[in-house]
Image (cartoon, rainbow, N blue to C red; front, side, top):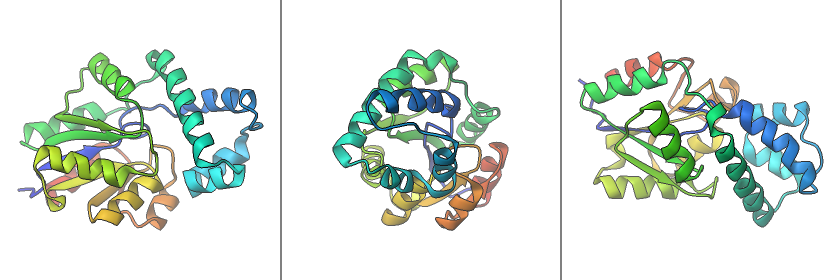
Length: 210
């Protein structure tokens, strides 16, 4: 029997396939904001190197980054109807819940976007914690643990980006990297995810043996 009490999921690129919509929004938004065109080479750098690397290349400061994120999230909300869950993720969440394992979400997306999507797709979770600082997920995860009365060894985090893994390693939370999101398998392995999976069905198998 698994010793994991709860599984905490990232949202964008882990539960929700937001990449096609986000890609289109970013490619239209950045030129309008004076940051130039975001091309395929930039996306390749993001895919293999993560968010920090691409924003460093762009020369974006923290204030500019927050502005980009807020504008992007507002546009995403307008187009949320385009976004679908990854195939098999809903059933995987239901399997975890059927085994008595809690399920939550910690995301740098807005609570409005996350909760509207979950309601539409009939995906039930125990708690949603969000925050705009995309490089501050360690604090959001700690907030989740405190609200749920959990210890770090009680949970596993599931995310698709290098920054997810870095946040978990910073606070000692075990983390599963998923290859169907924003960063590549090579990037997730390089960031030292505890496990890397290539399809949602594999998540339940890993949680079972932890």
